[in-house]
Image 1 (cartoon, rainbow, N blue to C red):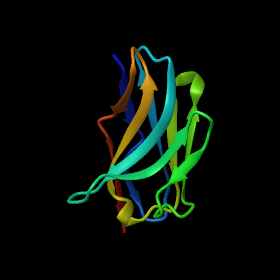
Image 2: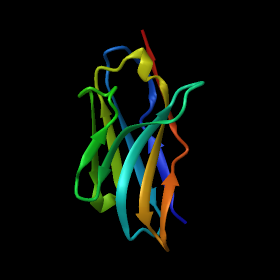
Image 3: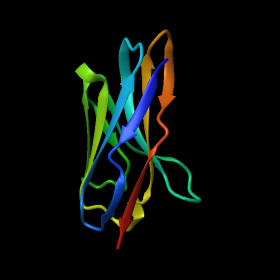
Image 4: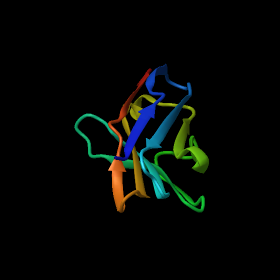
Length: 118
């Protein structure tokens, strides 16, 4: 069974940085797209960043060059480096992967909390 496990969240002050990691485990043949999403209280889940199997990236408009998504194919792990964090970045950050295990499917992690204080 495939699982995604996020790590790296925490409490930081405005202007500081965090690096999130998400490792996929289980029987995985290939990952097509990795994504990071976030959901703040009372708001809908939104895309933060995504990266494809060929390295194409896409970012939410609010990122404005502050975040960088990357992946290590060899260990089925995706990262999100977040710089210049703002209080508005406070949310639960979820990892997502469209991958091929026993079949192609879309998987979500349980999320990691990021809190940015002013």
